[in-house]
Length: 217
Image (cartoon, rainbow, N blue to C red; front, side, top):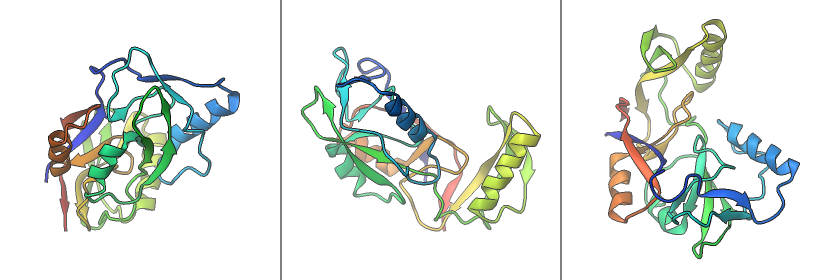
C-alpha cells in the first residue's frame, strides 16, 4: 500500500492560521507549548490550554488548522468532520484533546499522534543509516525492538553527527492508515485514507508520496 506524508496547506489563507490567543500569553503557556512540541513517543503528561486559540482575520478556515503554538511533528488541530472520517480508519495509539478556536463556528480538537511503538515487526523490518537528507550510508543489522532502535539512533547521532537510523523496509503486524515511524517526525497516511479525505473535501492538507516501503504481515 502506498503512503503519503501530510503537511499543512500553506496556500490556503495565511500561514500560520492561528497566531495568537484570545487572552494574554503567559510564560507558562510558552513552556507548555514548547514541551508539547517535543513529545514524541508518549502522550504529554500535562497539556497547555487548547481552548484559547484565535483565528487570524486574514486566514481561510480549513479542516486542519496551522498554529504557531503547535507542531505537526506530533499532531494537529482537526475539525469534527475530519475526525469522523479518521474514525473509520485504522489509527493506533492516539488521543484527542478538546480545543476551541475563536472566530470559527465549527468544533475542533487537537489530535496527538506519538511514534508507532506496538505494530512494527522489527525482526522482519530492515534498517539503514542515512544522512540528514535521507541519503543511504549503509545497512544496519540487529535492530530487534523499539527501545533498541531508539538507543541505536541516539548513539549514531552522537558518534556520527549528521547521521541517523532510518527504516529501509517496514513490516507492520497490523495494517495502519495513520502512523509516525520512530525517529521520523513526519506523519504518514495510507492511500485509501487520502482518497477518503479528498472525496469528502477535507481542507488544509498537502500530500506527498513518501516512497516508504511499508507492508503489513
